[in-house]
Amino acid sequence: MIHTPYDQMTPEQKIAFEAEIRPFMPPPIDLARYGIQLKNANGSTGPRTKEGKARSSKNRLDHGLCSAALLLDSESTIEFGVVKAQVTAAYAPANPEEVLLTVELVEAQWRLLRARRVEAKTLNTLDQQNEDLADAFWNDDHAAVWERVQHYVTTAERSHHRALKNLLTAQKNRPQTVAPPPAVEQAKPVLVVIKPKPVPPPIEFESQKPLTMAAGATSFTPRC
View (cartoon, rainbow, N blue to C red):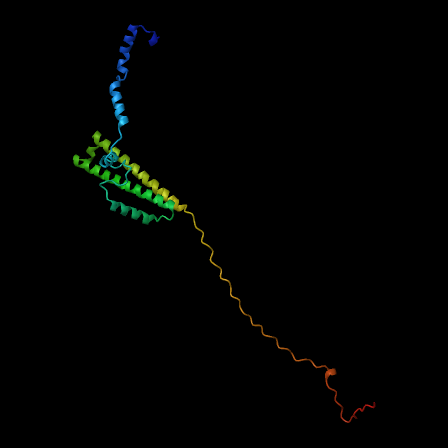
């Protein structure tokens, strides 16, 4: 089937063509209303008061599982401090890298505990609304809620496992500091006493002995 280009159609053909495709076209834009909305959006500066800014910053804190904030208003800073102290004492970071990874592990564990609380509360609510808990999941709305909660719990578990694995890997590959060799104590000089060897008495030769006169011999008298 050959279609005639729109610019080559007669006025009657254009009217018939527009009527045919009108159900598939988006509704026309009200330019006047669009201009007002655009002007309002460009002139908006967001909340200005402290209360408005605080309220706006928590627009996503309906259940806390998607929140970038670490502590919610309903959570205790004391309980968080206990969790932080327990994790830090258990893994004892020894350098700046391990300290950073320990902080990440603390935050991941805190969010996992939050997800577990939401999971338990969701189950308790479904149990109260139904005579049998299994019957709750035959409801499409209940099943959708439970599936969404499980998605957040799984995400929190993966974040916790990843943080724990990174910390353990860093500790396993921790640079080993080589201890300096112990100082060698110099040996003290030992005084050796050398005893002089005894000198043997001098040997007397026959020529060195004094001459003695034999008995009965006359003495020699020099004549000169």
